[in-house]
Length: 399
Image (cartoon, rainbow, N blue to C red; front, top):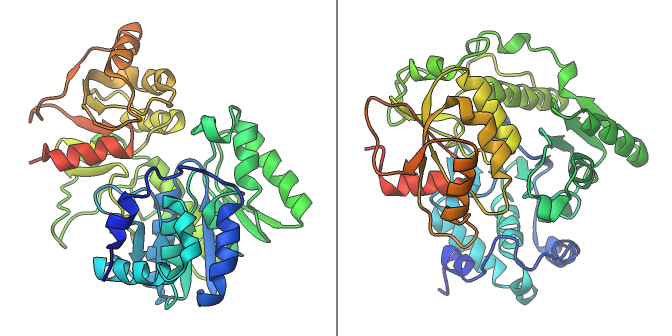
C-alpha cells in the first residue's frame, strides 16, 4: 500500500492553501459519478457553534435509529476526529481505505487539504442514511458547498477570518448565507443585520427560511439548569473516562446549539430527544479536571459568551492566539474575569509573536506570565484556539 491518509495530508500544507473558489466544484463534478451519496445531506455553516450543533444533531439522529456521518473541522489531536460515524470517530483503516479510493483519481492531486478531507468524508458516508457536513471558514465557495443539501443550518454568524471573508458582519454573513439551498434554518443571531440578509437571500433563491427563535424551548427545561454559570459546571463531578458520570449542566451557548439542532430535527421529521444529551465533542466548555475547563473559542463573540458564563468568577486564562485574530476585544471581554493570563507557548507559523501579545496585555493592564504548571487551588480556562487546547492536551498538564 502507498502513503497513509494522514501522511499524505501532512505534505499538503496549510488547510486552505492555494484557495480557488471554483476548484472544489470542478473536482467534485469529476468525482461524483464514482460515489454513492446518502439519501439525506445537511450542511452546517456559520462562525460559532457549528461543531456542537452538528454533533447534537448527529447524536439525536443516531438515537432515533438512523446511521450518520458527521464531518467537522479542524481536529485537536488526530485527523480521525473529523469523521464521526455512528457514534465514534472512524478508525485509521477506514481513512486508509478512503485514501486508496481517492488516489485512484489523478485529478484530485490538485485538491487542497480541506478539499481532500471533504471528499474523504463523502467516501466514508456512502453506507449511512444522514450526512452532516460542517463547512470550513467559507460559505458559497466552501468545498462542502458542492453538494445539494436537504437543509442548510446557519449557526451564529460574527466576525472571524476577516482576511478571507470581509471586514464587516454584512460581508461575512452574505458570503456564508449565499450557500443557502432550498430549505434553511437560521439559529439565533447576535447581529440583527444577519437576519435581514438571510431573508433577502432566501427571497432571491426562492428558499424556505426557518428561524430557530420561532421554535419553543420547553423541551430543554429538563435537560439542565436554566442558565448555569461556570461555578455550576465546576460543582458537578464529571469523569470522562467512566460511563457512570453525572452530566454537567449545559451552559448557555451549548443550550442554544442544542435548541438549533432540535429545530433541525423537527424540520427533518423527527421529534426532539426526550432525555438529557451530553455533547460527544471535545473542548466545548469541557471540564476535564475539578479546576480545568477547555474551550476552543477564538473570536470576539465566543469570548463574550464565555464572560457571560463566568459572571464574576476569577480564573487563570491559559491563552495564545493566531496573528490574524483581533486579540484586544477578545481579551477585553474577559478582562474582569482574568486573575492571571498564562501564555502557553506554541510553535506554529501563524501564532502571534509573543512580544506583540505582551504589549497588548500591558496596554489592557492584564497581569500575565508564561504558563508553567496547574495549581490545584486555582481555576483554569484553556481558551484561544484549537492549537492552544491541542498544545495543552499534548503537554499532559491536566494530570
